[in-house]
Length: 206
Image (tube, rainbow, N blue to C red; front, side, top):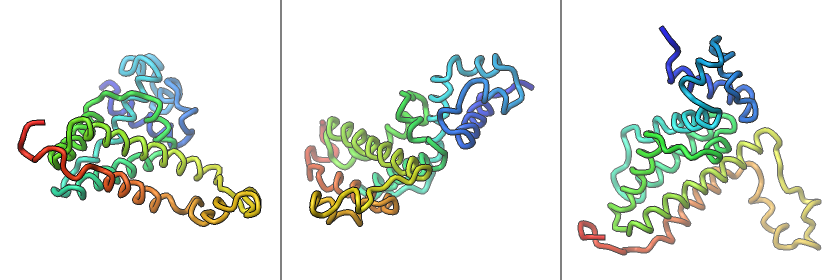
């Protein structure tokens, strides 16, 4: 029995976890499976295609039931699940940010988020742009968080002394590496609070 696409994708994610994004190559995936390089290439013609398939796999369980029915709880839960999925594998946010995965799971996730916003009475433009705003927030913050896990970057008091940077010194307790969850929830709430209250009555044309 030949190697399946699912096995190729699983091996790609395993290599990602072990070696990071820069270590993901067609040959590394083939070596992990104990197959020839051409076997991987038969399922994915390039490294970029391999990363597209792996990125799509990350979102496999974001739509699992139960999901809240009411807005904005449904939107928040979908966004949290997306972030959790990205955090589940090393360098996953950087991987997803570097590809355009127009694949079934990615498209179903986007469709569900947009449908949630449309059902809440928002215009197509607001629904689309809100989805992308939250997705970009999630990618950016998760990339920062995953980089911090390896290099632990932080702004130290001696880098922002109060006499030179008084405002930064005042907020320094809130920009450390331990506040990612709180920062994500704060930004998500801010985006939702900024949405128009009612653009189009639900059930009427948009």
